[in-house]
Length: 234
Image (tube, rainbow, N blue to C red; front, side, top):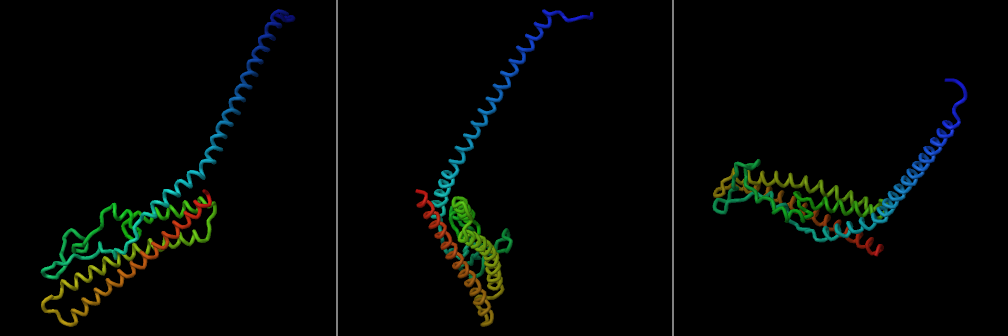
């Protein structure tokens, strides 16, 4: 069919488009307001989170401070590596389950080791490391003294682990020397060898004492730094 379209059809069609357009505009406006509202809501959450972060950091710092302050700084001399000697024979007690073949005094209870900073089998130094890291985060900068404390802790941790192996080997050598000699009829040379092996163990134990003193000093420094920071924030 040709010719001009019906005026009534044209008017109805235009009115339909106008209504649809108005509905579309209203829908778009509502969507835009929803997006702005959601963005504002999320922004508010982020702002509140940012405001809470310093409070959470300080709370964590207080908890770490109390935890490391309660830790033990004990000169245990790594006694867990010591070989058990038989009172009657004076010879080392053997143990077929042990790698060295000798019975050792053994480790302290887990709850004791967990609070002993100088122990070679402890997680206490990890907590001290966490305190140093939290202290740096709360300060907002990496101060030279914090870097020095972190380096000192890493060095002491490695030194204590290495010393543990040396102590274990020295105790084994001492036990072997004692086992090979006759307690009732030892020569002067044998006794000198035994004495030298015992002195070597004593030197390692004294070295562990110095490590314990150093880590105790480090712990006190960290506590003092935290106290100073908390005092400034009070």
